[in-house]
Image (cartoon, rainbow, N blue to C red):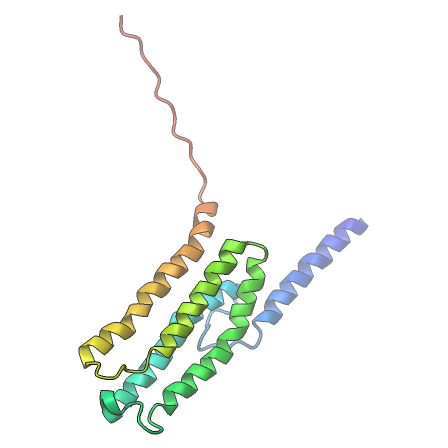
Length: 176
């Protein structure tokens, strides 16, 4: 009886810890935070937050042109967006790392996705001499990287949930 009470208490503490880990997540970066895990929230937030900052940079480019989007204080809106989303994604990222626990591969994949995300945000600034078509192509490229990394993170969960079916051996018939 005492052992079952301890198990129930442990299970409840895990549920409460999971809820507490995402209780202050901005619903704009993770609308399903109430229903999912920290990992789900982080995987949802990565492309969402990148899109938000990419759109702000697009507005700066429309207002000031590709070359003028970083002159003076013109890039301040994008820089502010990047800093804001780095703060907002910290909780889901830490929750995802906690959920990965001792699974070294999953932790490394989460860290790689976070590194890709931060690098992509830093590369929103147009390069000197870059043309409009090249810039637009370059800032769309991270979505493919995000998608591939997210699929790799989700793949083990998908294959683990599928039942493994062993192929049946064909019966040999003797023709005489």
